[in-house]
Length: 501
Image 1: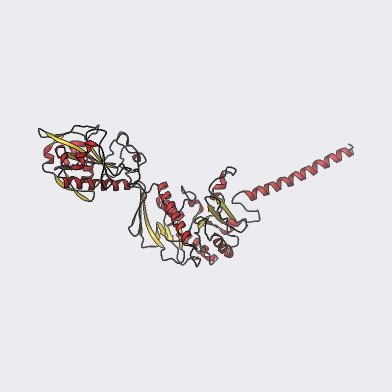
Image 2 (image 1 turned 60 degrees about the vertical axis):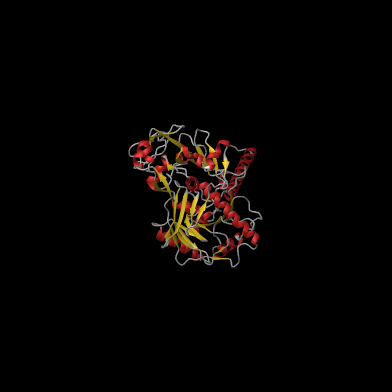
C-alpha cells in the first residue's frame, strides 16, 4: 500500500503533538507536587524520611521574636532539617525565613481561596517524630536531637513524650498533673522522679507526630500547657532526658519592658482562653497557689436557669464548678454569721444538711444552699425585716430579697452573680413545723418540732453551723430511707448519678 506525503505529514504532526502533551503534563505534575504541603522534589530518599524528625515552632510573639535565629541554629547543624513554623495569622513584621523547601510556614486562620489542608500542620509533617521548640532556643549539636530520639526509643514502653530543659533551667521541673474535668480542675504537684505528667519551665519536647495530631487541639497556646493537659487525660507519661540540654540566647527575649508586658498579658489571655476551652476553672500550681478561671462577684454564675432541678452541667457529666461552690460557701458563711449575730434561730435544711452529714460540705453537684429559720425570728434581723420595702444590697455587695417564687427569702452572692442561699421561714403548729410556701420538691414536707429542740452544732463548709438533732431520722423523713448512703442527683428521672461517675 502506497503512503502519500499528506499521510506522512499528518502522522508526524500527531506524534509531535503527543510528545508535547507528554512533557506539558509532566511539567504540570511536578509543579503541583512542589505546591502540595509536606512534599519535596523527587530526588531519591526524601528529606523527611532521611531525618525522621520535624522541628515545629509555635510558641512565639509576632511583635518580637527569635524565630529566625532558632531556624538558623538548627539548619547550621542539620542543613536539610524539616522545619514548620505555625502561626494563627501571617506574622507581622514578616518572618525573614530562608527560602528553602524544607522550611514551611503554616497559618491556622483559613483564607477563602485556600484548600482545607493548607491550615493543618499535620499535612506538612511527614516524619515519625515532631520536636516542639520554643522561641529563643539554639541547637548546639546535631547529636542533641539524636539523643532525644534514642531516649524515646529506649523508654517507649513507659512514656509517650521526652523533654529536655533549656538553659538556664532553674525552673525546669518534672510535675504530677491530675486533671478532673468532672470537677473542672487541674492540680499540679512536684514529682520526685524523672517520669511524670508535665514539665514546668522552658523545655524542648519530642513526641510521635501521630500522637501530637491525635490530640483534640494540638496547636492551642500556651502550647506546652495545652499539650500536657491533653496528654495527662490520655494517661501519657513524660520523661526528662538525661544529658540533653538546649541553649537559649544570651539576652532577654524581649528588648523592652513594654514588649515584656505585652508578652505577659498575651500569656495570661491565652491561659484564660485555654482553660475556658477545656472546661477548667480551678488550677492548683505545684507551690500550692490556686488560680481561678470561673465566675466571681463581678460576673454571672457559670450556669443558667435550672430546669427540672437539673442544672445544665449534669447533662455534660460534670459537677458544680468549683468557683460556684466557693461562692456558695462564702455566701452561706456570711448569712449564717448575720443570723447568729441577730439571734435568728436557723438550721441546715434539705440537701444542704445532706451534704453536711455526708462530707461536711456542700454536695458536689448542688447549686444553692438551704437554711430553715423560725418565722417569728425574722423581725430580729434588720436586713430581713426591711425586705418588705424591696431588695437590699448590703455593704458587702450581697443582695437580700424576697423570693418571687413564694414566701421565703433569698441572699444572692452579688447583683451580677445569682448564686444564692434560700431562707425558709417555718412556724410551729401543734408541735409540727410548717410554712406558707411549698414547692414541688420531694423533701418539702412538714416535720415535728422536736428535731429542732435542741439544735446541734455540725461542721459544714469550713465552719460550725446548727442542724436538727437526730439528723438521720430527719433526712429519711424528707428524702426516704438510706438517703445518706445512697447519693443521687436531684431529679433522677432527668439525669441519674451512675456508679461509674
